[in-house]
Amino acid sequence: MSNMIQAAREQVAALTQAAYERAAAEGLLPAGAEVKATIEIPKDVTHGDYASSFAMAGAKALRKAPRQIAEVIVSHLDLAGTFFDKVEIAGPGFLNFTLGSKWYGGVLADIQAEGETYGAVDEGRGERVMVEFVSANPTGPMHIGNARGGVLGDALAAVLERAGYDVWREFYVNDAGNQIHKFAMSIDARYLQLVLGEENVPFPEDGYHGDDIKELARGFYDQHGAGWKDKSEEERQAAMAEYGLSVNIPKMKEDLRRYKIEYDEWFLESSLHNSGYVAETVELLAGKGWTYEKDGALWLNTTALLKQKFLAEGKSQEQVDKLDLKDDVLRRANGFYTYFAADIAYHRNKLEQRGFSKAINIWGADHHGHVARLQAALDGLGLDGSHRLIIVLMQLVNLLQDGQPVRMSKRSGKAIALRDLLDEVSVDAARFFFNSRSSTSALDFDLDLAVREDSENPVYYVQYAHARICSLIARLAEEGHLVPGAAAVDPALYATAEEKALIKTLSQLPEVIRLAARDYDPSGVNRYLVTLAGEFHRFYNACRIKGEEAAVLAARLKLADTVRAVIANCLSLIGVAAPEKM
Image 1: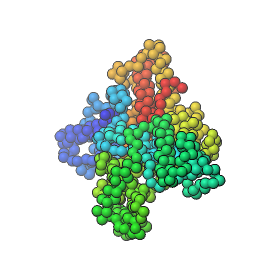
Image 2 (image 1 turned 90 degrees about the vertical axis):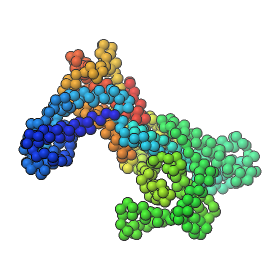
Image 3 (image 1 turned 135 degrees about the vertical axis):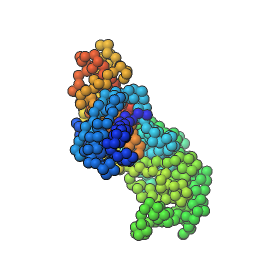
Image 4 (image 1 turned 180 degrees about the vertical axis):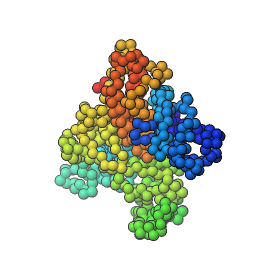
């Protein structure tokens, strides 16, 4: 796994240490000192690509002025065969190392050798993690928030895989509980209105009023006719729920497949209830002393669990005592388990039964109050939810057209659903735009910009860079110039600032992947792609390829093809196509 930036950093440390030891052996510096220097990449690289603070950090131990130490170190450096061409002293004693052709050639060679896996790091070391995302209620169409969560979850799962984790993608189907009762009741009311007349059947005030419910009722009527009006309400509504889910869940799968999202499992909430797993989980909490009964219901002592959690995280007793904490019902007086009880059971299933080391959930920001409560409940089960349950909170999406907010679909006249959006803009544009900002930032999705074919549209800008390189390679191949292997190119020919900047940008991908995985933020891949495309366009405008002397042409052609491969690699990571023609 290549990381040429880190390799250069480590070599700076080794070179300065070796120079110090040589100087100490000659008696020019005191021996045996342990110098902890920082090695930074300066913003202004005109004087060097890496800066070591060895001379300043060692001034006290070596009992000399930093500038004197720096002069001794530089005179004892041996750069032969290294990544560096020269070292200069700057300011109070910084050692500024300038990269040489070996490093630039090494970047291209490593990218060629690693192919589609370039950028991989081993942060995860095979750790098994689950990413659960979208998990929209199956009672209606998926909305724009689900569209953002879908891309965020899918791209994050891909980034974690590239960072060395063993990743499982899951959709949690809420096919039980109050919302399913309301769903069944709503379809039932619409069905009875079809059979008995709308004026004769009142529609429940808290029912689902959408046209999709009317369509489901019509579908049930078309299949079964009017006979079900004579069945008991309980039997009828059970059938309505089953029918509605049998229509809606395949639609969700179809919409998400169109959106290039596939799951390892669609996990049914009902399975937790039917197997007795929810009841067993609540019994475990009771056995550990975390529950109590009041008004016929069974309550979780969330207050005590949260206080324990917050104190462990470093809050003072005084701070904790000021918090307005509340307990949660696990089992209602009617014997039914709450959604929170099922949620605790589901996450116990993830961490204990299926053995994932971390459960990573993508949630809307409106669920923020639920995060610590669920983590604390899992702590109460001894599952270390405070560290093993990771919640990525996602801010709202604002759809814009003509600079104005858009809330309704012009086609359907209803709130814009995922499938409406994908009728307006391409899947590639939707996926790129939804992953263009960190989940913690609200996102303005400009529908006009998403369909524009110019450099203002970031997905077009990146895809155009890829297509432009493909066209260049095809034209030069017709003239007999094929892309050479890295070993056939003289890296010393990469002499311009634009070529060097482009290769440095190529070298950054492993660090981009590492940070995206660490921060659970795949939007870094989008920003990297836009930067890489910009550096390529600058290189292409400044450095002629066609018509150049053969060795220079080959070197620049190899560089362009390497950029093509890395753009395709990163676009694939976020589920966006890399077209060869545009």
